[in-house]
Amino acid sequence: MGGDGRGGHTSDWQSPELARYASGDALQAVSGSLYADHYNGLVSRGAPVLHPEVTSVEPADAPTTVMVFDCSDSTNWLRHRADGAPFTASRVGGGR
Image 1 (cartoon, one colour):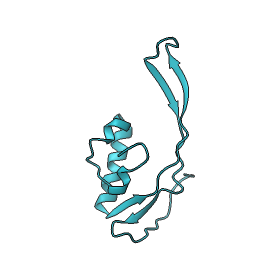
Image 2 (spheres, rainbow, N blue to C red):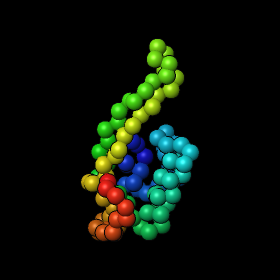
Image 3 (spheres, rainbow, N blue to C red):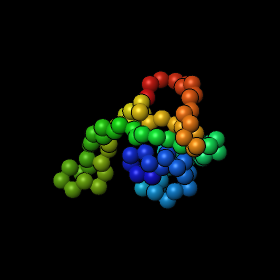
Image 4 (tube, rainbow, N blue to C red):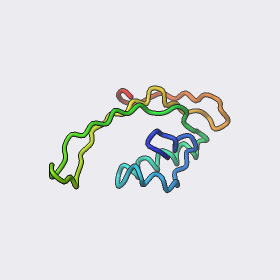
C-alpha cells in the first residue's frame, strides 16, 4: 500500500502492506473502503497530501511512544473506474 496511497491504485483490501500503516479500527476502515472500491470496480489515482507532526514523545529521553497528528488532503486523490474512465460521486460530509 505505502504511506502515499498506492493501495488505492489497485483496491487490494487484502494487501499485507496495510498492517504496516494502520491497525485496529483504522485498519478495518481502510480494508473495508478498499474492498468496497474493489467490489464496485474502482481504483484511486494520485496521492493524498500528508503533513504529519509529532505532538508528543514519552519518555522524552528514550521515547517508546510517539503521538502523531495529521489531516490528509485527498483533493487530488481521485477514484476512477478500473478501466480508466473517470468516476464521479457526491461527497457526504465535510472537506477533504
